[in-house]
Length: 129
Image (cartoon, rainbow, N blue to C red; front, side, top):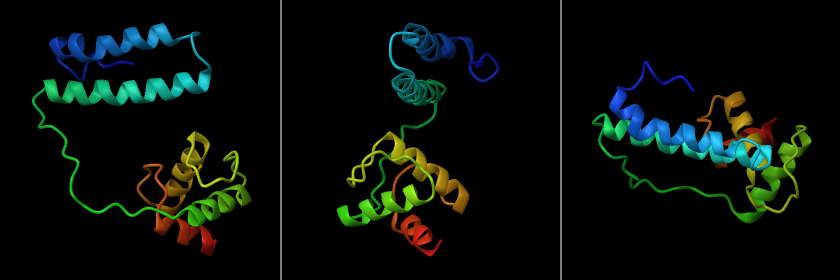
């Protein structure tokens, strides 16, 4: 990770270096998929911390309602993803890492925000082909 041009030396030492040390400790210590998940989460936290140290305001959770899919809708979404060749594991309505990756891929294909969260709009697009 080359961050030398993005952050000042002080921010690099306080936010980025701990992430780099953590990443070095992960190598070979956990399964590759687990390591990718840890790295992604740690990278997001390091980036957020770096922006805060650089003077950015804290993120707000917002107050917009979050639409969620029902269990039958989630199972249908998983079935539609499987029909398109994705391995989402067991079709149980639970969003695991494989389902989230497949959702993200289809969101990119359809030009939706690629956040990996299931939505009614994505389900509608998958239904229509």
